[in-house]
Image (cartoon, rainbow, N blue to C red):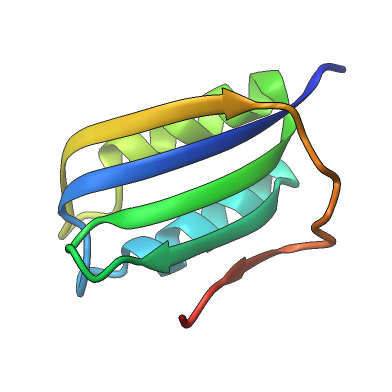
Amino acid sequence: MALKRLHAFISGRVQGVGFRYFTERRANVYGITGWVRNLPDGRVEVVAEGDEVLLKEFLEDLKKGPPLARVDHIEVHWEEPTNEFLEFYIRRD
């Protein structure tokens, strides 16, 4: 099992459509830790850690998003995991 860290910025109609809640639910299905938050510029930021194979499946889910969302672009950075998270949560900052 290769642990990785996914740092992604999602653009499109991704705020006000349940995208953060969708992301949290999908992360929990995969057993991924980290967080998701809205950014002031209208994007959504995701930091997630877990098995690389599961993170890639999670990323495919993020490309689709929930029914009301429209994902135009995802900027993805793969990093080394820090193992700082115990769960996946929605950041409110």
